[in-house]
Length: 424
Image 1 (cartoon, rainbow, N blue to C red):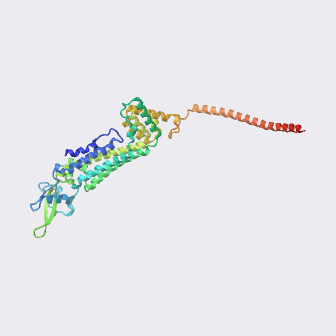
Image 2 (image 1 turned 180 degrees about the horizontal axis):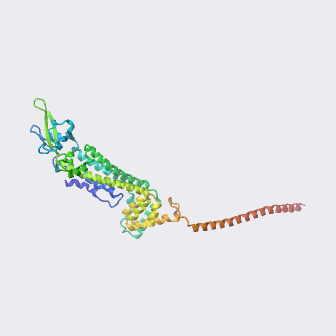
Image 3 (image 1 turned 60 degrees about the vertical axis):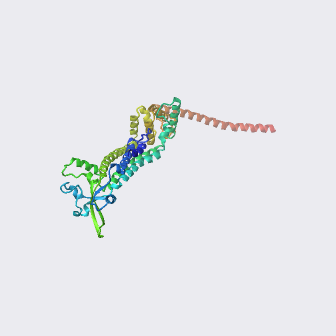
């Protein structure tokens, strides 16, 4: 049996590259491992015990009745759960079926599908991770360039930091769609948890949504008046009716009592899963609220970067957040989770200085600082003085032009007279 679980080692491996949050990792790592492990435990019933064992007369082969009851389901009498065990009924839910109407029968058809349902749940929990891994495209790993270690030479380190800075500078404000895809995956993880609660409720005929609450109430109630919800949902003893032809050709009815030892395992699995899904749902809900706050509150983004990466100056963080978008913030936060702290500090400071530089005011989102009131007054005075000088120069040019216009006709007349005198 241990060989079966060795295939789960690939899921247990913890990657040193973080491309998502810790809550998101709970969905596709720990939860998937638990669900697949539970599915394998239920599937390998030969190591846990026989799935069903029915008590019957000697007229029927044992394997035939066990197989029939396992495939075609068993049932209990709901009214018999409130009768005293050992006095009125042999076991809760087991009584004379002919004394009750058909509406009092509760059939159990799920137990042969438990292993498949657990495996399906594991696939659904891994789906958001699969989507994000494809959409992320290895961006974080490519931008790291082994800068998470920080043991390379200074020349190599400087070159890699320059390459990272150039990428961040040239692609600033173009990471929103990339970040929103991840936020969508977190929303899908929340929807998956809530949807699986309702899926399990449908699977167990409406008895799973309040299953954990019913178990807690059962533990606190009086022993004489309580009905064990685990036995009601996962009965250990049920009834099965088998019909066959008798010797004379008439239909004979055989009533059997079946023991389901596998339900002892199933009830423990689903009690744990109920509380685990509840915890995941609460954490995922607050994670989605946290993402909404990040999208609409730049101050929160500044605070989170400042609290997480204390080596980065506050003014540098404010400059970067003010002149970038939420997608850039998410990329920088993920890089900070993976890069060496000193290298990350240098990259953030260089990016902030570059954003604040006036030589790069053509970058989208850059806004130059306004001059002080005193400086604005000096600029107006200088402009007014330059305006007066320019007006004086323009007047002089107009006067000289008028003078030239007056001089040019006189010269022309003199030249005409000289030409006439030469002809004479």
